[in-house]
Image (cartoon, rainbow, N blue to C red; front, side, top):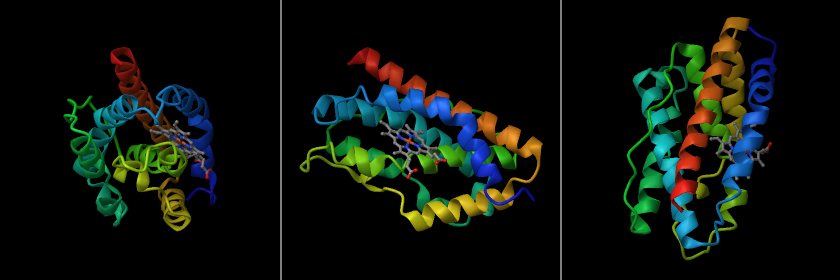
Length: 183
Ligand code: HEM
């Protein structure tokens, strides 16, 4: 088993630049503007449900029992429906090669909740925000990281998780770029 915190630190380092780039790109959506908010949600709907489904297909619930409760595809779909926007065609999820890759992908999805509360404050009260509103509680994030550190044991695991995490960041980047081009 890796030292406590080691796998998390490695994933954070491996994806730091990807997060910065994505934060900058999604910062270009003015969430106080209804059309831009719809485009932001549409971008996330192109990426997140595909990765959730890939994790389901890989049996990730066996590794993280509360994984099904962490899903947010329904929350994005509900928000888009309430805004009168269609669900977009999903992009293809990165391939999930092994158990460690599952943890890398899930790390990105779970981590993405951390900025949610901050982003939700920019959205008008009258608009639906079940997706951004399902922000991460400190306890659930800690429990996730603890399970991650228990599960990722070898340098090979860290490499697989890191590569998959970066591919998931890239997927969100692609979705965001496509939406910025059309708005
Ligand atoms: C404008 C958009 C975004 C903002 C403002 C933002 C903001 C933040 C903030 C403030 C944190 C740190 C929270 C803390 O340490 O308590 C964080 C962490 C994180 N975010 Fe984002 N984020 C954004 C978009 C995204 C997206 C789209 C993804 C992935 C799809 C993502 C993935 C992550 C991950 C994986 C972490 C955990 C980093 C760690 O290991 O500590 N973020 N984000």
